[in-house]
Amino acid sequence: MRRRPRLALGLALVLAALGSAYGQHRADYDREALLGGQEEAEEYARLSPEEQQRRLKAIVRRIDADNDGLLSKDELSSWIQQSFKHYVTQEAKQHFHDYDKNGDGLVSWKEYNLQMYDRVIDFDENTVLEDQEEESFRQLHLKEKKRFEKANRDDDPDLNVDEFIAFEHPEEVEYMTDFVIEEALEEHDKDGDGFVSLEEFLGDYRRDPTAKEDPEWILVEKDRFVNDYDKDNDGKLNPQELLSWIVPNNQGIAQEEALHLIEEMDLNDDKKLSEAEVLKNQDLFLNSEATDYGRQLHDERFYHEEL
Image (tube, rainbow, N blue to C red):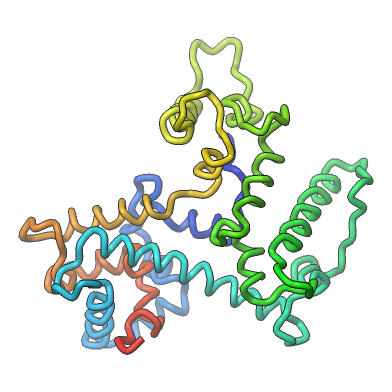
């Protein structure tokens, strides 16, 4: 099956966790996975039922932006999007401390290489390597270096924490948008016309000449190209349309999850969730993006009411 375009590692991991993006809800996953890992699951097990409910009530009150005692679809969606961004940023900040070997508050290209590859790598931009695997790695490493340089916004060649977040997650930072588009065109625009055609979108797919019709996944991809991405119906993706393909729509994912929660938990059919409805369906709520699968119960930023 054709791969999605290459994304920053952190975003790819986030997408892998968001089963609802593809119509698959994660409520049947084991508790450890839902709570973010073994440590979180063990901490959750140690919380008393009273403490679980106290923290959950605090989260509900923070989601309720207009303080009317009810959670609307828009409030849930906004909170879920905030959760996405928070954990992507926190992950990058944690990585930053791992890479900042000398503790000066900056990550150099040398430090990045040492942490990532255990050695400093310096490929010649113009020398193509004979070994195919080594050449593929050279290309990827050069792209990393280019992204590192693009993320830098000051005269210091090293990255501060905000620049490092832009390096790890360029799709989350506005000033990196042009770079994200440029990188996507380099990868997919084979004829160099500044657009991505349907054939380029499908990648290296070659139809079986003996087959009567395309496989199901190709039909799905073609439908997405036509109905989801090619907004002006000209048969190709311009840079902005390309961006909607490369960078998934977190807003759409969040709205889908908000609607799912309301459909499952709304007992009086008012299209909103009360605190009582959330508490009555506590397990479902904790098994959703609304609490990042329970992780928010362990993150004071979310349940501390004074924050």
